[in-house]
Length: 138
Image (cartoon, rainbow, N blue to C red; front, side, top):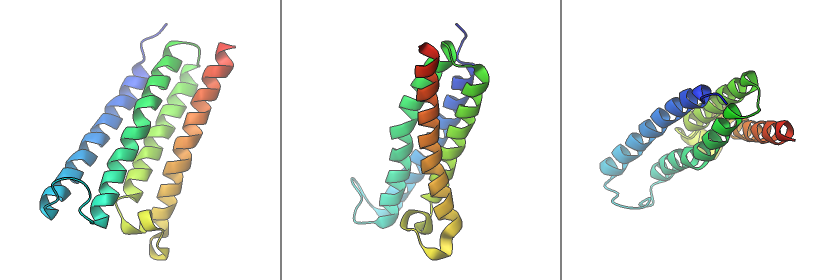
């Protein structure tokens, strides 16, 4: 069994990203005078979803990644999947930082593309990691 070093690096990057998104959400909340909830503010909703979506996905991914790294999944595969996931989550956060990325506006196709990369990249990493775990444990 090896120490989950790749998972630790990925976790470090993701927790920093989560902290930045948390602070940006809180700053907007304070600036807009929103105490709790969204305050009928579409920008606040976007920031809350950006922060929440990372929180929803990163924890289970990191737990599975660490298990994979400490058991049977080849280190190269763990590294590639970890890089892919961090990149996908970064793309998703960038996309949801804009109205175009969250609403699919024609003038912001690059942000729409970033959201697609973020969402499908996350799914691909989930499926790859789960598949590697199941296949290598058989």
